Image 1 (cartoon, helix red, strand yellow):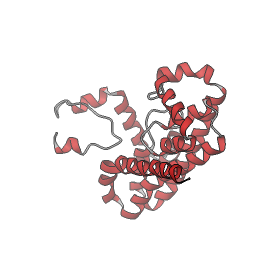
Image 2: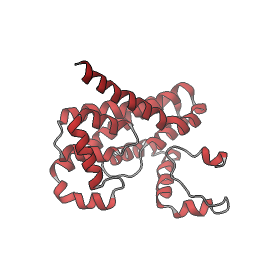
Image 3: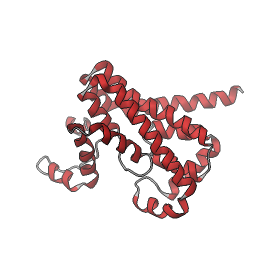
Image 4: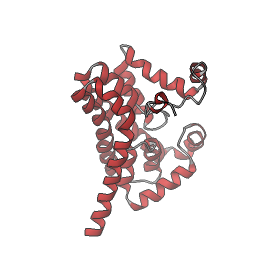
Length: 225
């Protein structure tokens, strides 16, 4: 693997193994890559903040890409506003999660075929895995989904379908989504543009490590009580 390939962003879709002359063509032919570029282009427009709000809300129930790349781009463009951007992203994501919960609780019998057929990551197998996770600990399930690369939309929809306590769902969503987005914004606010490469390369690893520690804490509490 070349050094350039190793530096591929944690959020950037793969463009394949083609040679340098065909990378641009391959990327243009990749619908996910085109969607990713479309998300990022809002950072170069006057509508970056409204786009961040809408994408963050939509990602919580049906949009296939997370808002993190746009959040990072906006923070890098105006680092002193980073925490404001994170707050907007968190609020929108939680509101979108509530919409996903409502879909799962009240309209899943109508909407499930569309979600299973057209929304990446939302599958019957994923729902069964979520159900089993909920049986162990609903709060941890939602918290980890909101924090990690696990598709958050699967958990918002499943929370409504499986009738998880709404207050627990909202609290777990606020804490996890807030931690994730404020971590990105806080790093940019503190270190500025030099932190960009570090976030691209290591953010998911840091989040996964934190999640492992979180689960270990739950296990420890169960043994101690």
